[in-house]
Length: 225
Image 1 (cartoon, helix red, strand yellow):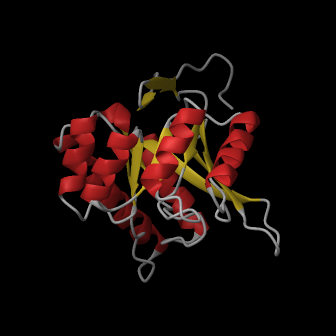
Image 2 (spheres, one colour; image 1 turned 120 degrees about the horizontal axis):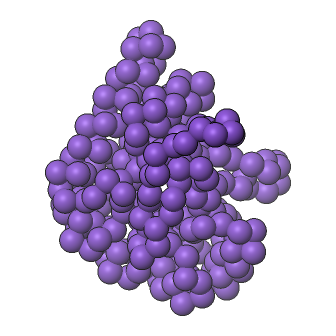
């Protein structure tokens, strides 16, 4: 919480045609459950997320019981008007997804496909710079520094491609289960990048049970007030 009387610079995040002021709040992104079996289950899952009050829906990047990513985007787009996130490192898949109605592309490969950023820029889509974490074989301080340097390099590449700052986010942890950095170091990277004015995505896992998949969510925020 921010101390009373302390003013923070306004920071906005653009997802599709929606603009969020994340100076004092997070944007909550609900992630579709990994056991979604078909189209009707997908819509039911998304309806539950909407009822829970999410600001956006993350469809992930894998087939959902025979519902391909493009089909999933169409189904959800017709059901809800919230911004939609997808995950892919392929420029052609990204282009197809944003054409189908996706608003945000999460690239876990660190923009390894050079055409992905151009496709997102042309479509007005937002991007999340992610990818493997920092080098855990060095000291914690150096690991944090190297992770920050790599992610800020990805942000610079996205900006150079014509994507405005309001549509560029960073996710230091990447996958909320299989992290490149230990949790503590990942949070330190998030803190440093937030302090430097980046739009930071924080991934969390909740509701773990041995017979049910974990529920996942992402939070896009400006800082840690």
